[in-house]
Length: 148
Image 1 (cartoon, rainbow, N blue to C red):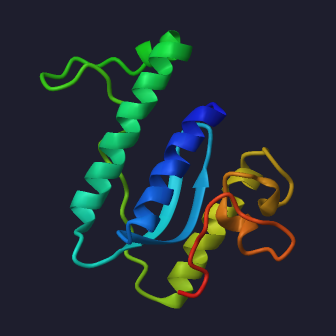
Image 2 (image 1 turned 30 degrees about the vertical axis):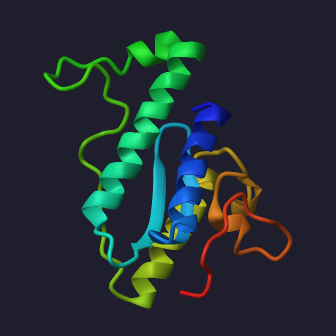
């Protein structure tokens, strides 16, 4: 995933935070997937926020790929009655973070994702991760809510 696509995702998350639709607690954007820890703020519904996020980012990614990498876009072609391309998988995994222990386990998992993939040796070295926000020496690319 090129940096332009990562910034489509980042800017969409910024919008959701700015519009007070979500609290963002953690994220990592990898080359072929992303992980988010967010809380949907009332009166918004998770199904609506997630739908809008996925629809908007898919549309922007498609526009970007039409201009920059038509070969990659063609790998997303599908034969569906309602769309020509499928940017996101339809089976997003939603996990309820019902305790502080589970929250910390999932946050640690997503912060280690880029290390386990061999992109960096330390989690905060990956620009597209909230690990930087949890480290005093770096400023994160997105504002997150550390005070959960």
